[in-house]
Length: 420
Image (cartoon, rainbow, N blue to C red; front, side, top):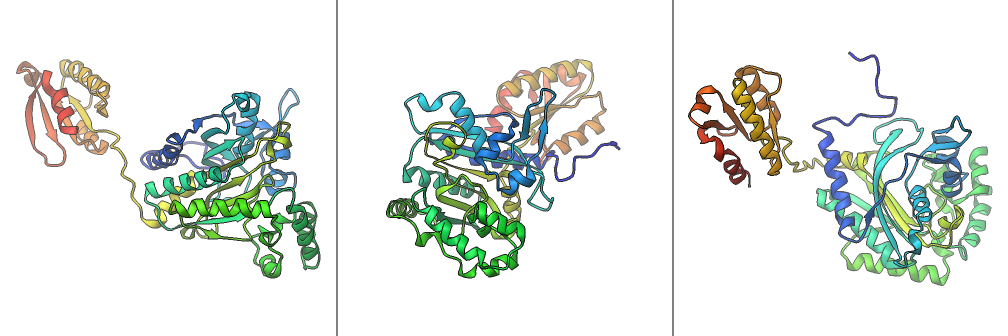
């Protein structure tokens, strides 16, 4: 028994469950790769200031949840709590926006860290796949990303998720709404922290999950009633494009998301089978973020989908993923000569793209066959001195139990034919 355990609020991905996580990541990434998005990978930690500026000084992420530390050299760094600010920073640093091919379309996959109260679906270390389209203001981009996320979820077999959609306006119309909302909030019976948040970023109060707060927000002014003509037209085109693609969504006038950088389009994917942590992903447009972190004006849009929560959603719906077999062929040698020959055949099978494993450790036939059964292999190759003297190996079908002799030099071709 190890003395050490995984830190509180974290988890280990181990076989066989880890295969589900890999399949989810692949399914989310597949439509992105088919739509012009290139892969990007950023460091696991960044300057604290990057997130303070981009995510927002008043957000819980920055004020309560970031893992921040000071290096021996005096730099203030933080484990990344989200992906967008890091990806945009990397794109600006590499001058990708100057290539003349806008938007810059990027996708990423990785681990993120927030110091939160651990519960099912909410971890201190979690995994996301995200996508960003940087440098273009176009309703078709917003629609594209929503459609691709919907496509990814449906390819996994998910059906009981909902897409919530809203517009947060822009720098022209949001200040008017902001002032109206602040006036409304000042008249409510709210605690000091919430009132302070209302003065810094009143839209964040709409995202408060406490029932005592939500009851008082019943008559709050809605942003949709304050949208300027340009934002109304933009939002309507996003809605039309999504609808034309056959993607069903719900208008949610109170949807604001938890990050300060969002403008105009904002959306969330929720699954009602997950209890209180119902959001499985979300995103939106962030036209001013580049300027917030010191770059030029680069209107952009993106999303991040939670891998862990998507796995929980699949389990809630009882969806069993069709996962490739970890091992298709298992080789059991009996004797030193068979060990040498079969190890060579396992290497040939792997080169041919067939998942193959080997009975390591010099176990006897009984112990080795137990390993073959545990591996889940469809076929087992067994060979001893007498078999090799006859130029054959024994090929056993683990499903039917049937066994036959196959020539040593023909075994790879035979398995290729059987396994397709």
